Figure 1 (cartoon, rainbow, N blue to C red):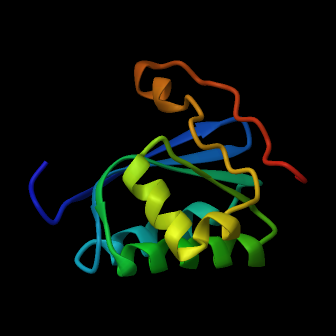
Figure 2: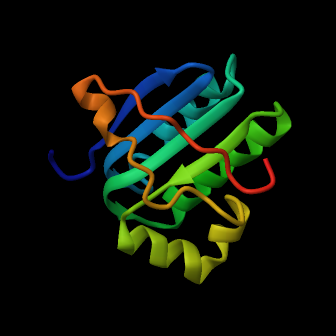
Length: 128
């Protein structure tokens, strides 16, 4: 994957839409996620955004995630952020965005098996 590249794989699991982000989510690539987020929120009840494979995220990338959260909230779609990425988790903690994406987000959820054809169950966040 070259610099300035964001790859987003979209998967469906029952009524859950899963976006798996890989690469860099920054000022150069955030518009791609914003546009995809707008179309992905429509027609689903729950959306999981997995950031395990992000190499880099900046404030524009964080803003794109918040944009998707606002879209989901406005359309009554449950949004869950899934991350085993320590760097991303640390940024979310420092900025307080870990609280925005839920008091009990699925940090460490094993949804990466999707690429091998395995569709995992996605547990609801606390209070859902």
